[in-house]
Amino acid sequence: RVGDEAAARAAVDGRTRILVGGEMMVAPMLGEDDVVGAIVVSGPRGRAFDMLDLGVLEVVAAHSAVACRNVRLYASMREAAEISEAMLELGQALATQVSVKAVAEMLARSVDRLVECAAMSVWLRSDQHLELAAHVGYTPREVGRMEAASLAAAEAPFAGNLETRSVVVLDSDEADALAAATGLPRHGATYTLVPIGERAGNRAAILVQRGRRRGAPSTRDARMLLGIADQALLAIDNR
Image 1 (cartoon, rainbow, N blue to C red):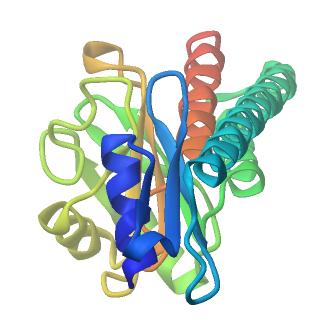
Image 2 (cartoon, helix red, strand yellow):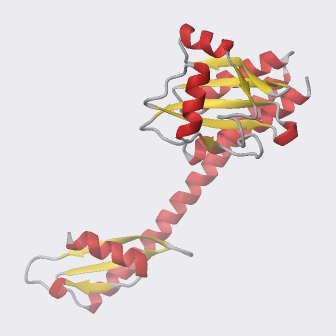
Image 3 (spheres, rainbow, N blue to C red):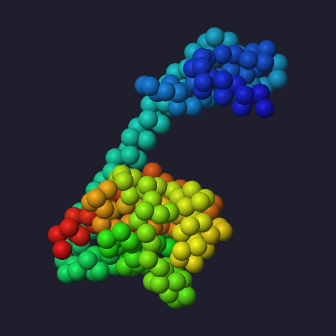
């Protein structure tokens, strides 16, 4: 459609313009460092817009851009406050756990409550292997297979993914390796790995399972997972 194409061009070049013989006009919604969007107005057939109309639309677009920026800022601040509050509560709860196993179980319940997922598991490191310590959302049969697995830290899906503080969506080969080693479902699932501790300081890992349509965790969930991993590292190191 002409209007869609005009809006797309305005969003790219930031220019206000009158189109289609004067029957349509478009104005970009300019933010401080980017273009938030664009407003397209179509008039009745035979009625041409003039520069005065375009000036009014520019003012509306400017005010709309400010409103959108304020909404984004508010949402970002609210998200940051939510994550900070959740991490404070989690840190207090983890401090009361008397063993690393109890910490892992608390982590599993916390991830299930705070992050959108279909299932998740916590794997504790023992020398050069990781073993299942806690889980949520799996069937008894799946749990039995995971408990029987001892996953090498130097092999997929962990190889190379325990080096940095990050949220890693497993690629196809890594997900295949995880499914082969643990019997977890491969088709229709996306797996995300979050290390607890980095490199030689690695203590454990969180694996989050989501439906394929869900894909990677949202920005909010990724920040939440990193915060959870940080709190978990402190709790494990203090045991």
